Length: 283
Image (spheres, rainbow, N blue to C red):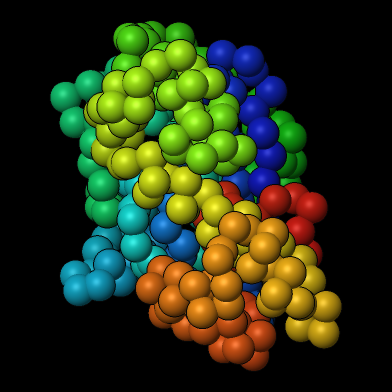
């Protein structure tokens, strides 16, 4: 299994793209065949070979197709089919970025959806060759980053921001360090205005996004530690849960398992698209 994650080099691109990532599963890789994909407030453009199948269990529906596709922000856990070898080169956009992107202004709030980009006019405009980019990602990740920056820059330079996107950008700087009630005071704006602008640009409430970010941070924290190192009381206080039953309810609701199950089946949540930092232990 090859897995890397890198930030854009271009300041223009990094305003709207959080990172690029690669997952390349070889036939002999010993990984979970049906890993979980955590709730994610970001959209991903996933580049894949044209004849490579993908399958997302959206519960209750299943999204299937072949080749490159958009994975839009999603509020629930998806189950992936990684039972066969595959390769994905991903572009993870920042929260709310689709609202500003050219060609997306008419439908910036797509949620809980997977959409094929077969014969995409966007790819033709950008001059994207999925096969060439994927091979470059496998052999020279840094050169792949530079190539993606070069392709995306002209498109992202056309982005436009209004008052709502500017408010959302400011909110995101403080969302993980403040309570929602504190945000208005910090940003000199009413909470109602913040909520309205944030939901307009992301399709999500402040609470939904904050909860997703906390879950992602907690799962990466857990993933980086062996079972013998885990102190669930410490986890409760570190991530702002009132007590252990609160943590257990949260994990069961979001991921469908308890902390004890996580200890036994550590691979359930590590195969997250663009969600495991380069500092993490990768299997």
